[in-house]
Length: 300
Ligand code: AMP
Image 1 (tube, rainbow, N blue to C red):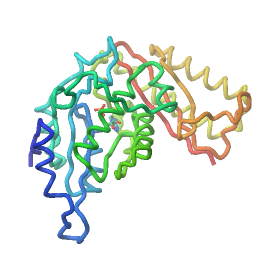
Image 2: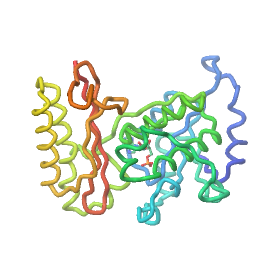
Image 3: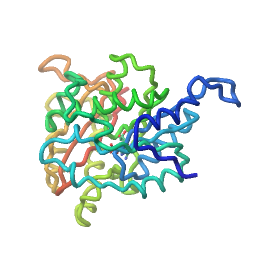
């Protein structure tokens, strides 16, 4: 069945009202509402989030909104692909119940909004460093979507690892009664993480793009299998950067962090990853596309 589309906040709220506080017939528990926030131009990665949402809720709302406040000057807000009809058709295949596709005016009566949702240190590194203000835009739009939909569950992709960490922090700090689920990265057969921005790649660049994932996997393997000195660790990072650059990428960042995005250095000079789960994070340009990827490394 095709999902029902709402463009304004009050109609969506009205549609969701009957689910609140209702018992689910089968199990006798309260009905649950799930939210999957997206910017549209949906691919199998997004559809996987919807499938996970369906497992955790009775009704699934997918928001489709290219959020202006999370784009910087000179970024791809205007050219970002908008494909609502195709998106709705894809969402029908995974039984999404409602699509919320608001106008900019509906979301932002005043733009830029004078109210801010700031995320502090966690947002000032990695993508936040190269895209100043990006996570402030993510923070306000997600806070608004949470207030509009009031979901019990919200599903976000681990592909945007830093975003997921920021949203978990938001939920904790603003006491949202929402269970945040992180969904594994969905990849093409050759390993490239699916992304709406992959379509900016030329045919040649698309051939090269899987190098990013391969380089992270190999680095993860080396980090796991070797007892590393600081020197060996530095060399591994340099070698990985060289490999990615030689393939034609311009690296924005390649960093290794704890899985909570803290420093892996136990002090400013000592390297110690023992007993820490770590994550390698990368952002790199290939032509017009800024690609993101990450790889968790479980250190035993
Ligand atoms: P976007 O439309 O790019 O804002 O993404 C919407 C949601 O889908 C975010 O939570 C992303 O992390 C998630 N997502 C995008 N691509 C993937 C992917 N390849 N695998 C898993 N989740 C993804």
